[in-house]
Structure formats: C-alpha cells, structure tokens
Image 1 (spheres, rainbow, N blue to C red):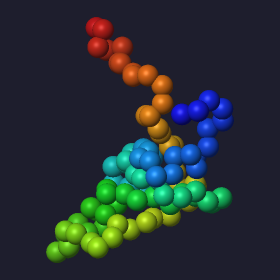
Image 2 (image 1 turned 60 degrees about the vertical axis):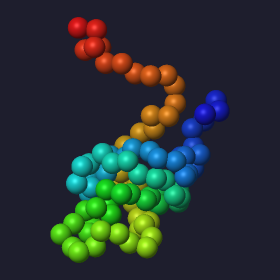
Image 3 (image 1 turned 90 degrees about the vertical axis):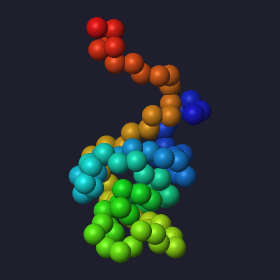
Image 4 (image 1 turned 30 degrees about the vertical axis):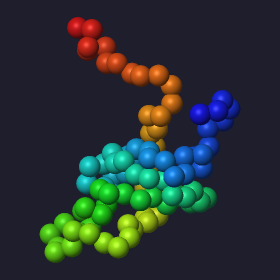
Amino acid sequence: MASGPISLSSFIGKQIQAKIPAFRNNVVTVTLRGVEAGGIWIESADFMESMFEGTQYKMTPRSVLLFVPFAQILAIYDFGGGGPWISEKVAE
C-alpha cells in the first residue's frame, strides 16, 4: 500500500475482516464492494451460509450484496500491510 493516509475506499474489491455483532461469528471475512457516507457494501460467504441455513438452497445465481451501517461495525481489519506477526507465546 502506498504511504499516506489510509482510505477505506482503497480496499474496494479486496477481502477485509470486520467485527460486526449481527454476524454469527462476530468477526467475518468479507469482500468490500463499496463505501458510502453511512456505511459499507459487502459480499459475505458467512452471510450467505447463515441466510440459507436449514433451507434446500445450496447455491444462488448471484451473491447478495449487503449494506452495513457504520453504527453496526465495531472494527475493520486489514492484514495485508506490513510484515508478519508472530505471537510472543511462540518464543516461550
């Protein structure tokens, strides 16, 4: 990533991790599809799995795009920058 300020829109089309309490697993991997003033548009396999769990459907012609307001997002993570991280517990 280029140096300078980080812009959420620079991650459009890429996978990010987001902490969204409405999702079953809370922290989910999503593909960022758009950014608006009030939130983000995402594509999520986790959402699709939970949406169709218990139904006969195992496939859809297209993935659902989901708008999540910023008020419903606790954190957004990107592990694509910098170097690797190794837990201090590895050295123990």
